[in-house]
Each structure stands twice: as C-alpha cells, then as structure tokens.
Length: 178
Image (tube, rainbow, N blue to C red; front, side, top):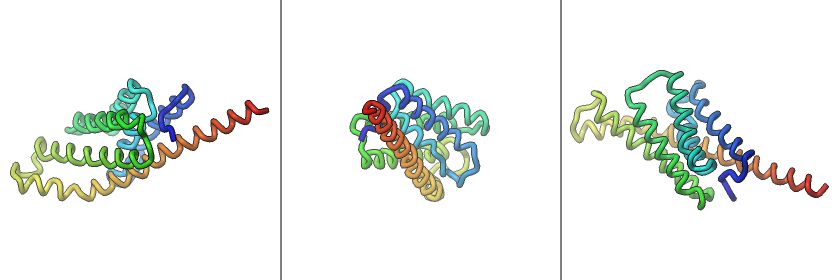
C-alpha cells in the first residue's frame, strides 16, 4: 500500500484533504476532537517534503487568524510541524500499523509539549512538581479526545486517499483496455 502521492492528481487530492481537514477545525466539534494532527501527519506522508511542511502550517495560520490568537500558538504550530516531520520520516515505510503508531506519537507529542507550555508559560498552576502533575492529570480528558480524533481522522485521510488511488487506477486501467 502506497500512501504517498505519485502524480499531480494525487498531490492535489492530498493537498485538498489537508486543507479541508485543518479548516474543519472551524466547524463546531467536541473539545480537541479535530483533524489537525492527522492532517499534519497525512501531509508528511502523502505530499512531497517541501509542500508537506509548508501546507499544514499555512492552513493553521489561516484558521488561527479566523479563530483568534492564543498565547501558545507558536508551541501548537511547532507540534504540528514536528508531527509533519514524523510523517515525512515514515513516508517510505508507511503501513497501517506504522500510521497508527505515528498518529499516537503525534497525539502524545502534542499533549506533552502543549501541557508543558501551559505549565511553564501560563499562571494556571504552581511552579512545582505538584503543579506539573496537576497540569497533566487535568488535561487527560482532552488527551483522550485528541487521540480519538487523531485516530479517526487519520483513518479518514489515509483511507479516503487509498480508496481514491485505487478507484483512479482501476478507471485508468479500464480506459487502457478499451
């Protein structure tokens, strides 16, 4: 199974899925159940490396301009950048099991880094071990939603991409035979 794009049509499809996925966060959704991490991972696997890094960040910047600023935007964007790099890393060995592991890695990376950012840069918790533990413990419900959303949307992105490639190749093969 090849998850990366192999021609211009497939690159366009991958670009469209990433763009639509990140913009999906503008619609009402359960807390942290968004396609952003899945879109970043999918971009890393499916798009050429230069586009893979640029496209998710661009769409995040645009959607954040619509949603409004937040104090840790640079950390959030950094997490999606790193998740895209995870996708680039697994691109040539992408199999369903590795995609699932990469999705869990991206979700975990986001959870660990953004909550560390909340602890360090916002005044919500005392700056001691107890405050750090509280920060992570109280964020677990958000992590659950993030992980479920990331897994769901990864399945949607990669699944729809593989199905589209399959149907395109069947239609293309049928054309050649006739």
